[in-house]
Amino acid sequence: MIDIAVLLSVGSHPASGRARRALLDAQALELALRLTESGQTARIHALHAGNPDEPALRDYLGMGLDRLEVLETAPGADPVPALIARLRELSPAIILAGSIAEGGEDSGMVPYLIAQALNRTLVPDIVGIDVSATEAALTQALPRGQRRLVTATPPLVATLHSSAHAARQSAFARSRRGTIDARPAATVHPDEFLAECTVRPWRARPKLMRVQRGGSALDRMKAATETKTGQGRLMVQPTPDEAAAAIYDCLIQQGWSNRE
Image 1 (cartoon, helix red, strand yellow):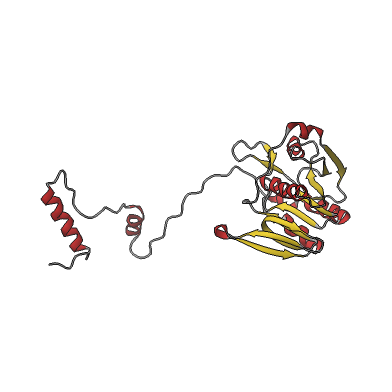
Image 2 (cartoon, helix red, strand yellow):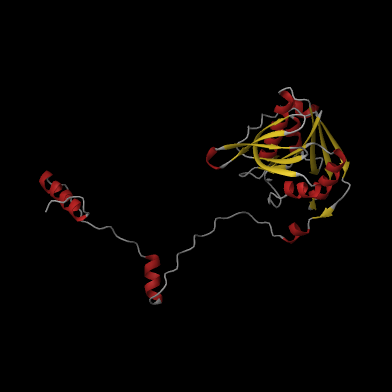
């Protein structure tokens, strides 16, 4: 039996800011569930580091999980040490995670830090996986919709690409039946980097104006602010002969006609 650990986080709706399941993490769980439903003998360990009372976590249970393990950490604590300690105990063959979270630092570094601490291979941006007894075949997303088949030997860490299978809907009855197993984190460290950051709503930044070099300050200001007018002449209700003559003259000026 192959053990698969799926790292889950709490997401944030981009418009309302309401807590929800993180879309990429839900796609990682969807990939693990599809692997077990295809007949592969696998056991899924769902892990989250944070508050076990967060209602949004039950959206993952509604996808078909029987159990979700939550490592209790205080707000503002770094989840990476707690996850590393628990993953060392579980020692799963494959660790799946979204490529980036929807809250906190959103750096996308958590899978890389875990892979470095556990000395594992990391395969980014996968959209599919097939596991055998000795190796894993992963389909990796490339730019412009291309795909590449990558073969790696477990244990490994893989992150999901947004073009992977969409996560299934969360069923309310399943979310109520599932169990959230809360346990204290073995290692807790404050997130010193996040404590030094200032969190504020995103706002559009003004576009930078191209600097015009040379000339006086007035010339540079005119070059940056003036609107270029189109060339040509305006004809209002011309006769067919006048319109044809104007078109012919324009073609000659642009070099489209060799006739003098």
